[in-house]
Amino acid sequence: MSIIIKIAGYQGERSVHTRAVQAFSESIHRLAGDTVRVDFVQNIVSQGHKAADLLDQTESGEIDACYFSSSYLGGRVPELRLFDQHFAVPDRRHAYAILDGALGRCLAEAISKRTGFAALAYWDNGLRHISSAAGPIHKPADCQGLTLRTLASDDHQRVFRSLGFEPIAIDVRDLPDAVASGRVDAQENPLTNIYNFGLHKTHKYITLTQHLLGVAPVLFNKKSLATWPPSVRELIDAALKEATEKQRRFAAEDDVRCRQAMEAEGCVIVELSKTERDAFIAASSHELAITRSSFDENLLQLFQADMNSLDEKLLS
Image 1 (cartoon, helix red, strand yellow):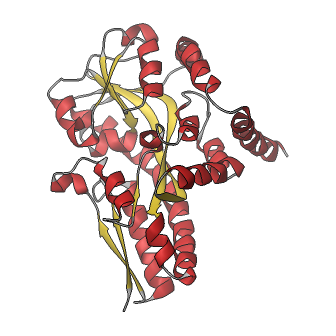
Image 2 (cartoon, helix red, strand yellow):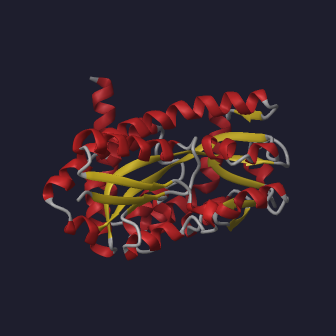
Image 3 (tube, rainbow, N blue to C red):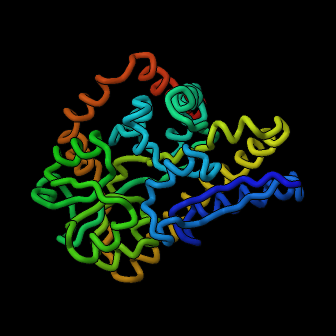
């Protein structure tokens, strides 16, 4: 009798996350044959659920695993808020150095200690940018008074408020309607979500702020893992390693594809100059300092050390 791994997500067929779970499933089948099978529900939102229901479903054991934004767990695992430091990580390579280094292992231990989850991988949840229906955004003054949808994170909301936005949290299930109806003037998301959710049809102006690289831990139910033989856990680790490499490649490729598609449909892509981006950094620096002051100094040192290790490799 085969072991069934039940996984669910909240995005459609074209999503880099969906494709990564499919890659995981294919790797499991190649490595295990019919002894282990992956049962994947691509999008629980299409079944009437909120995306955030995935966390409850996984932790309760209704399903075995999901991917989800680390920001939603920041209240229970404060260490994860390290990834909510706006403008702190310059690019994907530095983010991966952190996730795959000592800090990533430390955060996985914190997740296991404080929740019913085991974080077995970290996926790229996209470089986040700002889209708007009101016009191009070049400077913080352009943000004044605009209602902006963001994640349910106090750190995120404080930063966007410092830029002049009026931030509100809306579940991803309700985001397309909020944008199309004009309930929000702006929102922030990776290019893949802006395009695949159809947000660009209303929000024609997209400013490449690159203010954050979202992180999506792949979360397994700890009790489920404990019931499976060690050989199955080894298969899961091997398959996730392959899937994570592909997922990160998909994410970078999708940025290029989605940008080209949106430009072809008439969207205006705003690339900030260094001076313009520095103005956003300066406007939000006080809030970032507040966020950083809440972290253990050892964690901040690990965060910086992992980034510095990449810089040293690049210079050698």
